[in-house]
Length: 284
Length: 351
Image (cartoon, rainbow over all chains, first blue to last red; front, side, top):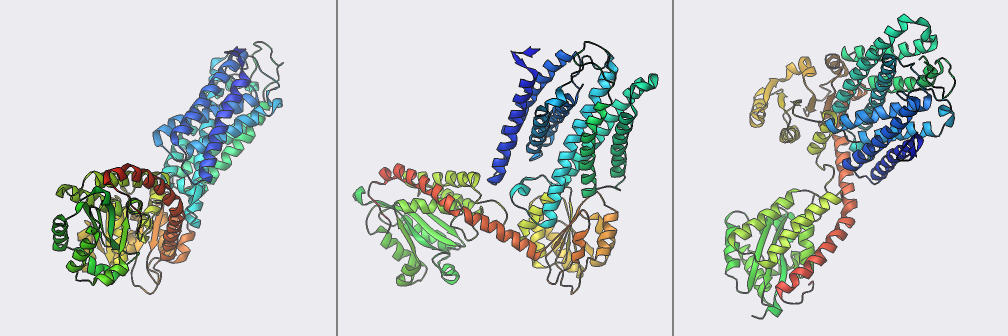
């Protein structure tokens, strides 16, 4: 499958290049103590998003479904979700440096997945067995991971700003960071949005699961429920004022790292199917 | 007179050339400025002029059409200020031609200011030009030079770090508050102690949009006076301990010999506002806020030394930009001189 004569992985490489250029330009600007052009980063990330969307479209056509059937596709989809959110959040809240950090994270996720051919060795055709609800559940779950990716970024920025103000190092990168309150407010919104999306996704998945308990392996069940519960508890503690400031930020960064590490575990739980076999009704 | 003798010149004195006492003698306060304008308007051979009069400089920019115009102007200026011409010659700044252009560009850009990179001077140059225009004493040369100096000042502010970072303690404190709260409008600022530096900081917060100010002092009447001038509220000093959690920013400058904000007070306040930061600014000596307060999560504490250090760092950054700014302005001055030289009608060199 190609689009305009280019295969899916070519589109993904082009997208990764855009994110990488955004990150490098941002780094160069920061090294020169200059503020990065918001328009330039927005244009680069936006172009990367379009190219990645085309890559996902070509891959989706090839696997006849949402392309989240192997670790490579999951990383690409998570990066794509984070960028989609940035394009909305960045334009709405105009948080300085968020574009820089988003392009950095997306560059890492996309390049890492492209550089690991093993992650893309097995492609599942119609991985969700034609069940649109299960496919929607999986896509929604990964989209919530995109939200948590952005949350990890804003939390990281919070930690940097907090360090800067506490240690009284105010120049260089620190001088361009958004305020503590702005970062806290946007992080809270992302946390609530991520938990709502993940709850919705797990709610949909559980309807399918109770009808066929064997469809989900125990490791996947435990890891997914564990991640969801940890984010839910974090949100409740934040809303009740018991987990705030840098402890909240550290929790959000650590939880996303755990979620990212758990992705291969979740994917490995997939009931094995022959690669590139047409519509075998692979269960998640 | 022949235009071949015409020259663009600058005559005056600045903080670089004259002491404060001498600048006070030369200051053109009130009627003196009017008298000078009248004297210059009647001075033969002075085709255009504008007077820049600030606390750090008195500068007369003009286009003279005879070789002795500047000398006669100087004599008139000295007589008006009752200053010996010999003394004035020791402290004067007298430029001709291209260096005059370069100097005006540097003045407008804040490079020549005592507080390097300050922006107030650009407003003062604009006001001086507007006043001269209103009197009809500018012409094609000064119009061009002044207007281009405004553009050059804007250019260097945009493309260099000459104006970056605050260099006064009060402004640094406000900048830090912006790094914490982003927007000062919803912030409630407590001014604890009614000293001069506290009042200055309160005014800086007010001018940058702080929504609510409260002044607390052991002398309630004094607090009420300051509160009145700031459209703020005054409260007795004793109420602060119980209401500390209501404030986002606390500026402390009392003469108390021991801390007035203890860790226990700060912990108690943070229990009631855990998710919202609290910013303490300690401008007192000895310190009003126990240093242990800085270790609390979501609490930020800056004392006088911290603020002075940041102001000094910002100033150093500005000073590091001077060479780059001067080079940029030199290019602009050279281009501008090429444009205005034919309008003056002569050859000019620096004195």
